[in-house]
Image 1 (tube, one colour):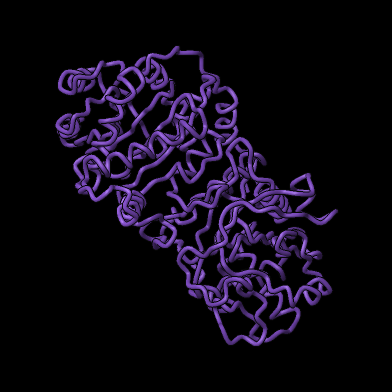
Image 2 (cartoon, rainbow, N blue to C red):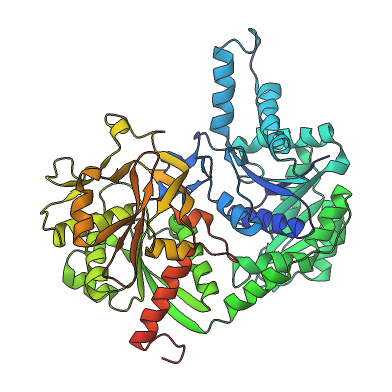
Length: 542
């Protein structure tokens, strides 16, 4: 029977439940178990797709086109399992389903209530991946903090799950903060005690308490937590800060998390096999080279808005034994060629990631021009590819005021335009989402990077390369090397005369893994290392 692990948070938010859930997924998978992670968010949005990146951070996209919480990216990167839309549920999606059913007469005129109707729908969605995947263990992260009003139906639902599946098939992990008072030189356990008491008052007794602290948890504090929270001392797991999130599964395994979860779920504690992961972390911590990548974007004040891009750059660095430092460049600050040159002069590579709207676009165009004329490695993703096309049209093809119709509806040269079937359609829910096939040109940089002629990549966008201008670009040397044959859409462009200047309409960052980097990020960082070496600044003593 499928086993269930629920991870809740207490005391404060932003303690890293997503990393803890992802780490546990890897730890259990390393024991030979089939694991699926999922996230339940208490907010009322249907999904994060239309939320401001500054409020929510990155929107992660699954193969089946679901716009999800960024924690699903952590789950996929750690467990190397492709998730689906059933792996992320919001309160908004739960209530929408219930209200649609009520309007259709699904409750036969009965009163619709939080209990049992809302909790039943939450439970149904928690149990769904077991039917879809046959997983041995499903790890469910409950968003928010225990005590939040909006979380109450979710807490009640997971309380009911244990009664439904049996205590031997269900375990609760509570992640809390142990504040350290420097003046008293003491860890304070009282906030955790109160948080656990709140959880107990809602009918849930945690099997494992995971504590975040700035200093090691001493035996006295551990004993106090065990006594007042009614948890075995061996099931109090310290979650210490690490240099990299990728070290956390190794730390958690040494702390005994895998053993404690196996005990709580009454399953055999098989030996874990994290040797390859440990080698990857060791390579991360001992690079031979260094490169600086300028990330030119419009949401750079919140780094989580580009989380998967940042992690993918890191993955490429691990593969190439290079330390990747990111220079966060606000595109709005690049107002002319002189400022752009001064700001990007020290970059070994330039990446322009995705985004919506016109803010910062002109600065991105200046960045693309700088990369093209200075022969600096350039990687354009989604909007970044469109920027590459716009810059080339203006400065090489001499199409004055060439633009995307998203930015300028009256442009005389709409080199980026809406897909034909989207004209007149409003934004919400109309994006091209999920994985699509892409055929690569023989001998192209893309094909050499992938090592194959056909690939599947995830998308999240509305505007496309305008096919009316294909011949213009191809003749001038901006080759269209990736095509979606089903709809005849341009997916990849690359500048033939440049060492490495490539743009993709899809989002390769969603498929990159720390021990298996995406081919394009791997090759982009390789090219940046070569550029850095040629400039004489690629070594640590330079």
